[in-house]
Amino acid sequence: MSRTLIRNATIVNEGRTFRGDLLIKDELISATGPPGQVRFPTGSQIIDASGLLLIPGVIDDQVHFREPGLTYKADIFTETRAAVAGGITSFMDMPNTIPRTVTLETLDHKYRLGSENSLINYSFYIGATNNNLDEIMKADPAEVCGIKVFMGSSTGNMLVDNENALRELFRKAIMPITAHCEDEPTIRRNSEAFRQKYGEDVPVKMHPLIRSREACFLSSSHATGLAREYNTRLHILHLSTADEMKLFSNELPLDEKRITGEVCVHHLWFDDSYYDELGARIKWNPAIKTMFDRESLLNGVRNDLIDIIATDHAPHTAEEKTNSYFKSPSGGPLVQHSLVAILELWHRKIFSLEKIVEKMCHNPAILFNIRERGFIREGYKADLCLINPDDPWTVSKDNILYKCGWSPFEGTTFRSKVIMTFVNGIPIYNKGMINEEYRGQRLMFDR
Image 1 (tube, one colour):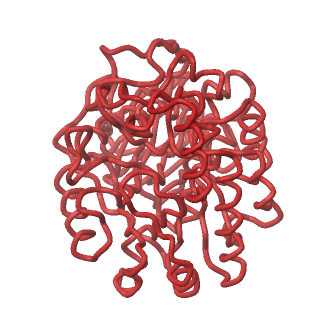
Image 2 (cartoon, rainbow, N blue to C red):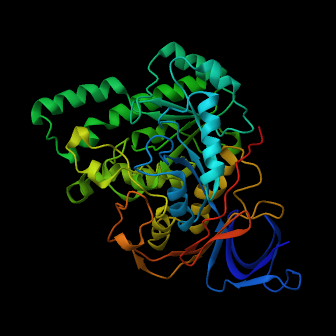
């Protein structure tokens, strides 16, 4: 049996920050307590965490690891290497792969890929189409994170645009529905207008005018209206506008909410003033919008209208990103840098440490009913991250771990650095070294 004592850490957990010790026995957190008061067996490995932050491992509820079918961009092995270096210990992967994950057969295949290739814990969404509700209803809610519905086509041609199909999905779903919300007719009209003006050479900075605030609000309003009508458990992904904040409430604790929202790191970090410098490198769907929208999203996190911070990690090759506007795919890599980017907002006094841990670690576990993860609690899986809050480093080609080899953060200096990441009690990332032999576990859900 393995034993590890993390000694004298600054623990951030469940709304508190305090110095303490933590004992790991095999996969589990065995004991926590004040410094020097946790008893540990002879022969335990001892880690001096003086000056370091200890948090639960980050749970990312929205990634696109591109496997199967698009592995020239990324794959589960390469992207979980990057994720664990960024303090992420669990992920939920989206269904717009090749083939699309819209049947139990394709879903089971992805779970086999996860068991073979993932360094961290994993789950996979089943995707909704206009005609696969019977297949969705066969999925086991205890073993599948949720249902993904594209109410905007985005990437992968998975648009659900049949109103009757949407209503049946919202009426019958027993797992959380996670939604990409952009109104497709609005986007098509905007695209045609800008194509008439610019041809194929539309400036990338027009992206938030094409995939507009109106498109987002129309679709999000429709989704929340359906959820209220059918009392559906709905989680809207990657919110990007100030307008959408009025669709959410902070009057109930998270475990009682039926409608929840997520914001992604790029929408909290960038605004439309960055398009001239970074171009298609920050072309995401939904689009990064104005400074006013970004400030509203930051406020939404602080006042609990927004429940989760995630990445929408969606890598493309650098060559693909250099194409003209309509041919350049939307999305970018983020899992290696998401935690340190949000910690930078703590250094800027925008968020507290407790709020960051709540939105990136605790709330994904609560919202998706993940079994025994997301908190520093005795008996929970030892998914943990040790961070040096004051060890500046700069993102460069030499230290990027994504298969695509680039990051929108290149040249950015972050003050905080991930030192160690434990997955099920095993230090998979340790001061730049990665244990590539370990494989994570399938997430299970108390539903």
